[in-house]
Length: 294
Image (cartoon, rainbow, N blue to C red):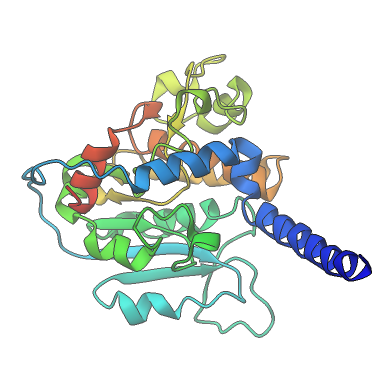
């Protein structure tokens, strides 16, 4: 009996420790969505096996392209240059130290998660943008860090190597995640982060007049998570530079935390780049159009 108790206690402690680690890792989806629901939907999606015939033909010139990301100084992003040599890369260190090389790209402030780097790139390069801009996270792969990267092994290298650039040019904006969960399920479209007040603050003075009308907010806001997407230069230029400057200034000025302000932009990138408030393409069509996985 004593031996059993001695074995059971460490096993229980190990199980609790693993649970805490997983909870911390998935706090993002735990906060906004049902984690068990996400796991079940992902499992179903993995074994769904449904296919379309062939990727539809697309037209559009594809020239230069760039990867944009934010990272903390301790994160290793050497994988970008090593594995994506045909992509330019703009990697912003959001927490530079005294030892950070002068050649390192940095953001004006460490706030808003990846949004500060995304907007800073657009603002600084507005008159010389490449044809295709891919905004991604600094972790290359692995379920615990990159569960939201929508390739079989959750690998951003695979995602960008198979990304159909001509479709990006044709569509203007593509979400790099096709899986509807989290973000597109009906229960997720009543978004607690996008209130009328937040919507008005962010879009006040923006170029699309209907967005800035007092009290206006869409009844639903939905898109597959999690702030990884690609856009064409032409789509970026549909908004004036002042819009992007205003969005970045909102991140700086808002009383929201780093995480909360970043979360607001995460749920609105598709709107900023000209898509409907609910942008949820059929999953099978999305995989086919975006990645050629038909």
